[in-house]
Image (tube, helix red, strand yellow):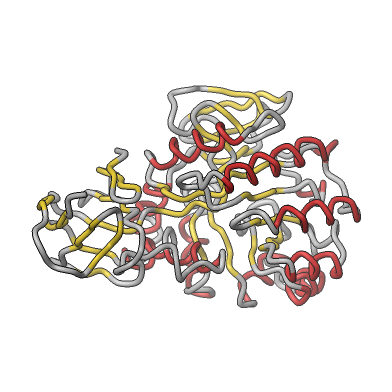
Length: 374
């Protein structure tokens, strides 16, 4: 395979921006070796690691659900690669035990096939608090049983990563500890928990918070809630930065309180990568209007967002430095998964998953293992 030299753009390596740097790629791997190479000159902007999206509910017209198979997961990875996310956690929203088992089986098959871009799975529910259901079907929300736990523990042994969003009201501290011990990334969310209960969940092994500020108990003067626990404990937290789910002013407050462990998610739905104006979530109709996805009663139902757009919001509306916003889509989610030694950086020896952002932060090109996909 021909080696390539990428020039003409600032290089973000996952931690720092390097203006005028040259990136060399050979056989799909970043290298520091010399020798002949074909030069690819970029027209300004930033060359960064491919984005990592840990909450992807759908795309290309499809939702992750009971009919999902390994081929559909591969297609979903391809759809989001063209949107800039070269690694994703396909995410199942609250569903039946049968649907959960089917998606776990599909994910295990996708992992065995070494599906490009497949980082594992994220199960958002069904072990949530119906008082904070958001767009989840309340009829399917339920506490975690021993059978549920055993299914998750088994799946975790066969997936690259498994993230599970649960409410501390719907799972015991012992269940959380057993999940954490098995390598599951336990993320607290869709919860009305008071600060003490959230703190107990973190002490038991939860290491992440799902879409901070949304579908959770809020920070108030005498009861900090789950938001307060997220901001005062060394856990990671996903953020939907579309300017709709969380106000830019609130984002600035969160970044001041927790500058190192917030990362960006798309919370993408079936419409991602399409021109669809509507779709169904279970039996419910979801409308796509003016950058929003909502149920017919106006409840937000996921986001109409790419991570490149989220980076733009963080920089232009929330006033975050470019290095920080880019880390929030690359090295930080990699660290959340415990895979920072393999993902989220452009350094010698790593796979050449890359995005090129124009000076206006729009997505210009994407490479996966050195091969251009956009």
